[in-house]
Length: 142
Image (cartoon, rainbow, N blue to C red; front, side, top):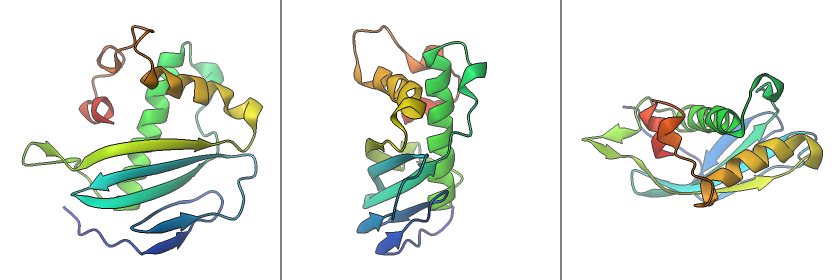
């Protein structure tokens, strides 16, 4: 397990990601999609901003569920990168909690499929169950 060292104020360059204990910002979005997350990690309030530059080839995916799993895998990798962690559980308990996600569109047409896929998480009316889509328990959690 690594020791979490995160700065108070972070300015995230385009194409990068970062985490902060207080304030996080970026200058502009360009064509990418901004994923701003507010969460607790080991009980500490943090925020994270990621510039997602459409690294997933959505045309190869058959369903919104497949796209959602790929986006959640991306977010999971961003948590691992920004927090410099390997494990999301400690003593059988999750180290992440109270995750809130805000999507900032750079290009509304390009980002619409991702936005629609993420909306599946907020609806009880679509019979979606992440456990039916992937066996990855960390993805189930986030």
